[in-house]
Image (cartoon, rainbow, N blue to C red):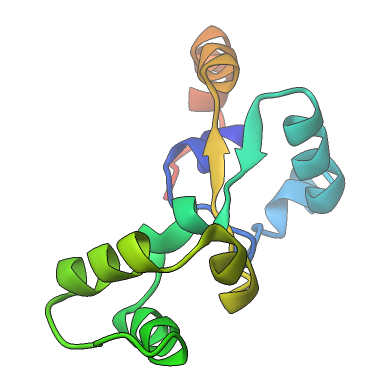
Length: 122
């Protein structure tokens, strides 16, 4: 699971493959909590998650804050970052990325041979 978080696309709505439980006996929620507790990953803030939001969600945030919603994704994203407070962002959407830490990367590196033995990944 830590390897999956390390890809940079794992978030609070990501589906954990069923084989984690039936093949390895891993409880996904419990394992994710353990990885965070041990400092191998963390749940990102709303601001740290902005890059992964779709344009319609970003434009909704701008509209709710009476801000111009025109422009390309980067323009819209920059406008949200520059004009919407962390407090408002935290309430604007629930999805959050999970981010691997340096300690988590060290674990992945130390156990890479084991990870590679478990077949093709995504």
